[in-house]
Image 1 (cartoon, helix red, strand yellow):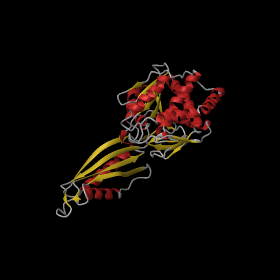
Image 2 (cartoon, rainbow, N blue to C red):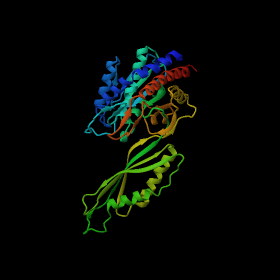
Image 3 (spheres, rainbow, N blue to C red):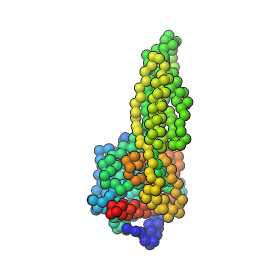
Length: 384
């Protein structure tokens, strides 16, 4: 359907009127712990929210929560993705508080606000009794953060990829459109050796010293600025005591690029460098912990253009960026995809994370209109 000016104004006004309800829903979701790999409790809670609204949710084997809106089984699908996992361990106190226009809490913006916005967008369409020309499949997915390896998005997109007209992920700040996927490889590099006493066995190769040599060598790597390509050692551990020559040491390495060829080249360079700089008497093992595909959507992708236009309609000038989000998966499979935000927030991945409440008016309006525009696009494409 083509939205009339009256319908567009209704979306704008209704989104503004629902700001407080979206904020309240965000807080309820945030109160349920959901560490990556342990999302079951929040999945059950989100499923219960859908049941309250008359939907019949499905929770799959990895704890993704699916609901389908519409009755067009042969038509393309619009998939919405909003991840429910957080970076915080299960024991993290989930202290949520409001101070005026601000909500504070671990994971409040990344990504509870997005899950609440996804649910609220369908609430709006249901309130209007608007039937979209193709179905919307809303997925509260798992495993987006850290070493989750985009497990939830991968599972959902692979399951429905033959039916998908496109994918919209909700994650990040309103005004930002992600249309390029920053790919990554995450490795654990483990160095091992004989170990021994720091004085009595002096001269025996140390796993820590060997790992340090490798890390120092990494800093000499020259990587391209375009396509942007990076590397980082994020964690190191090893050793037994101050007076023990370390028998084991390990590091977590993150390799990233917006270009799959550049990412693979970097990985090959790192492997060669490790081979060259491993001291005699030590062994090195590389364990691949995660891989996220890189890629970029087409600059003239109609879905991207709709996302831009809908954002401008809310009064915000769009900014297109590359990032690592759930849309890495559909982009790598040639499926049109964008990632858009729900509100404004700061200090993500810290216990001091906060979001603003007022921008939900624009974020919710953007998501709701884009759902209508995208489903119309996919229906038109199916007829062409």
